[in-house]
Length: 227
Image (cartoon, rainbow, N blue to C red; front, side):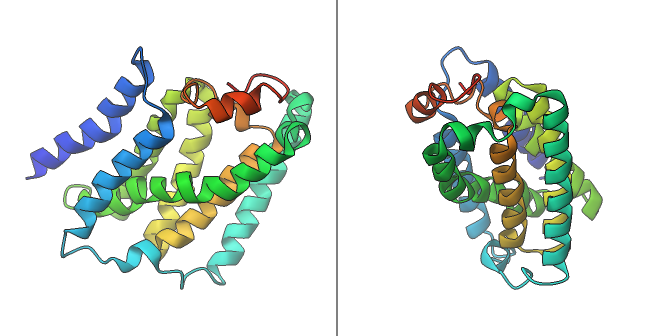
């Protein structure tokens, strides 16, 4: 069983992203994410040992966790703004300035259609499915971080992988700490929305979103290259 789980881990979190990133004709990223989420959710919900409360328990969204989440996020945003202002000032708040409607759409839809599905895959599923051979919490956090960061090779942008590796540690630790996907996903959404707002968002458009006509249309009206 352990060998099969290791093979499954490698297939889902190494093989699939690699094939997706370098395939000549690629399936749109968001539907591909939903397909993988569907598989992971199916496995979780049919497992009697899985506590379904992990998927929607919001009780940990309170102090002290909320103060920790907001404090760390605010620090990260300040560092991000200072970095962009120093090294790429034209990108600072470029998306909300150039295309506020598209930016607003991302703020509303991104947490629901991207963040939460990713949470199911890279935290709820991964932590439960592979706990038998990743026997410590930190090993699970590191495996979650690796899988979450590696999938972002589909954007063919090193900065996307670096940023998601940093975020992966935070989101994986928060899920391990609280056992709440809602709490972890709220934190993930804060960072993701912050990235799109302050100017790092272009690193998460390139490559994988070429199949999205909505993204392409919006990108044509924004400064720089968002496609």
